Length: 338
Image (tube, rainbow, N blue to C red; front, side, top):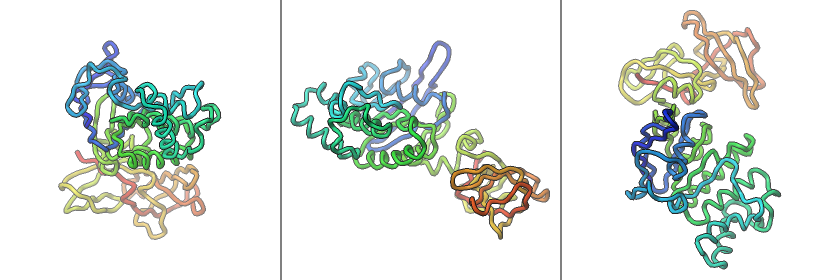
């Protein structure tokens, strides 16, 4: 089990990471999620021993502050993979095994096992420059997994890939982590990637953790409006929770938690064009996406005249100025409590 207690990283007077306390249970994947510059990569590097820090990093209760990087038993994967260009695929994967003195036959067996595991069986003799970006990242993952690390540290491992490949490899990586039972700390700024990979998410802002929880919990109940905005909410409306139901001018839906005032955060998917929708408005903006059209809709004055995001299908998308009816989709909204 990884424990981080009061961890702070300073560069002069600037605090890149400030008093972070987190834990990662055995076999758990925790995603460090946040915008660029929030300190998530610095936090990961401090856990690895690559950054000087105040506070404590412990594994199973043992303090690691005086333990050098190569003796922590952690595997690291960075954004660019950092493969050895002069070694073939098998040589890259076997590097850590050779350094640990593992016998040749055992190395070759472990390399073959990992190539199979990451979907690259038969690639051992290839040069790494012959591989695609996605294949190189699979080799980097295999190399990190080869010594059977007690903790896997992944710093934006898929961010250099195009979106389609990134989505594919995120699913494959999630399956790989679960198949190997890996304990992992993953840095990402991508909400979908965090939801795909992680059992829990720690949301960071300006070097501090502002919320932790399961991905669906953080998505549906952000800690504050900043968190909701980072997680895709572009408009906010007053709401009230009463008797297990959250109500606003857009309608109501079931929620858990205490009664009282709240704020409804709207993502584009929170309102959908529907012939029998309960909410009326006029389209004042539209953006074409690959598989949908995102709209800006000004609600009727009797509903407050708010401008809200909405979504429609590509083939049935309304035109600018057209009046539409909208239906509330609870899966596309967030509820922020005071």
